[in-house]
Length: 213
Image 1 (cartoon, rainbow, N blue to C red):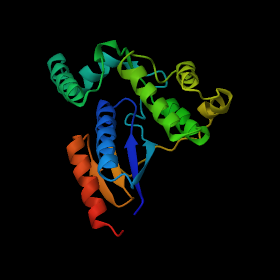
Image 2: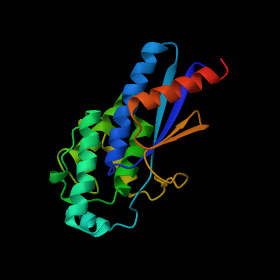
Image 3: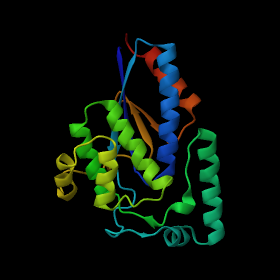
Image 4: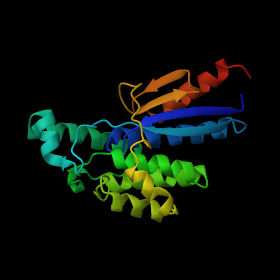
C-alpha cells in the first residue's frame, strides 16, 4: 500500500471538527516521519449539523442557551471546548461569534473550491481560513460576500465560485454518519470524534501493518 486515503466528514461550525483536524494533521506528520514511503490523501466532506437554521442564522448566545437550557450549562460546555482546544493548540474565541450561521453556502463554496483548486495545499489553506473566520474573528459563514472574500484571500478566482453559491445541486449534505468529525480510513476503518493525535496515529499505523503491502 503506497497511498492511505482518509475521508473526513465535518461542519464548519463544529469546534470539535477544527480540533479533530489539528489532531489529524499531527498524526499524519508523525506517520510521514515513521513511514515516508506512504502518501496520505485527505478528502473533506461537508455535512450540515443544523440544516433547519434560517438563511441568515440565529444569535449565537440565544441558540446555545435554548439548546443547553441555561447560561451555566453553556459556560460548562464552552469551558470543555476551550480546554480541548487549548490542549490541541487550536486558537478559538467563542466570545467573538455573534451568530450561528446556516452553513449551506459555506459548504457550497468549499465544494466548488475543491473542484478548481490548484493543489491540496490550497484546499487546506481555505479550510483553515474558513475555520479561523468563524472561530477566531467571528465572521458570518452564511454571508456570500464574506465567503467569497475568504476564498479570494486564498487565491481562488471569484468568478469560478460565485455561481456555485446559488446552485442547489452543488452541495448534498452527507447523511451516512451520526456525528462529526468522522474519519474513514481507505473507506473501511471508521474512527469517530476528535481523537487525540496519538490515538489517530496508532490507528493509522495499525491499519497499515494489517493491510496487504
